Length: 606
Image (tube, rainbow, N blue to C red; front, top):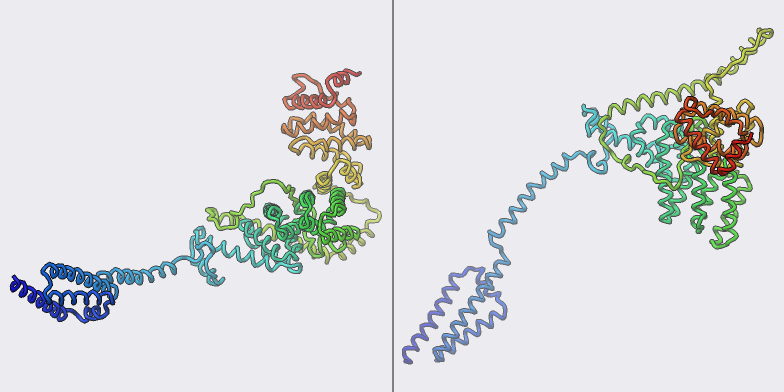
């Protein structure tokens, strides 16, 4: 038994050595290097296997040798696995490397195509307008496009319009404002009204010291295109409200300063100014009082002229704030300075600076925009939008531009001609006077009614800018108009009343005050009552209601004699549906004022 086991032992050891030598011969240099680089742990395993081998040679039992062999195999497999792992880390297989190479090759192929795509993309069709294009190249690109209604051509013209408007707005000052206006009108500012509004507001907020110049510019544009002036004013009001909500003092200061100068230029109504001041001083803080004082300095003189009661109320509020002493000392000092400025008559803050009073009062359009209304800033006008009727709209604007610029040229020519021919006319008149001393005088009748229109406008503005009927009556009486215009004044008061959405007692009290002052006013209102009743079918329901309520007020207060009712004859033939509605509203209002028994007694009084 021993003899048989011993050869087995020797043969197994011999075979193991042979296999080990053959492994070394067949293994590559990389494998040998990996074998040398084995960790100390692997070397321990090999030492352990050698000790097993020596033990087996020394005659250990067969079972021990079998176990040691199985252990050797497991360890060898583990070593081989470790070598494979290390080899795979150092040099990845061709199968693994190929996808990466493919990706890099494909990416290098894709890069030129992407660059080509980027180069092909039109710089004008990007969101922000793309890179800078020199004007000469832009003109050349526009000439190459034959279809002028195409998106590319419209986009190019939009970019050119934006650059032109921005450049002109940034260049404007007192000396060149008339030239800038002419250049600005050459551009289609109806299409670019959003751009123009944004440019003006941005330029003013960047340099508030030139606010009076921008206000004069807006006033001139507003006289020709009132919708542009209205859009700028709306955005300005929204900016002020935004600044007030966010406690942004700088935004409130710039916006209020611009509003003040627009009020001075008669673009905005003074009611907006009073509303803003009331809001700022309602709950006074250091910042709100500071903004209010800055605002008041700019438009205080204008307010003094058009609404003395309103500015008195504002200064009374400032006096109360000063007495309460709840604000900072610095702001209290500012209020004291403001009172001193008012005492001096705002001499350092004129309404309009010299050289900027460029719009005739008759040409100006005043916008009555309250502070608290909901306004649409129309931000969509700031961005490019495809216009299907592009060329048609361009032609329309060319016609408008030609008309405006021809008017301006003719006005300037007439001024020059008038200045040069004044002496000649005077000489001719003197000669004619000498020749026609014994002749008759020629009287000229103006049938264009320019004076009447101007008179009605003056009355309307006086009525709208008054806080109560007494102030309004005082303003109208100070005008000292001719007696022939007495009836026209009464007609204007009635027309203003009829235009309101609902009846306002202000007009009844105002008409009653005039009736009490002079008999001529009372007789005028009597004749107007008869005329209105005869032509009542021409009025809308709302106007009809306001007129009926105003005359009911005049009869109730005995401002008019009740004998005016003799023109009303109630029968089917003598009345119309409108006159019946008028009579119904008229007597309902009288009944509300007097009560039914008194009204009945008054009607039956002989």
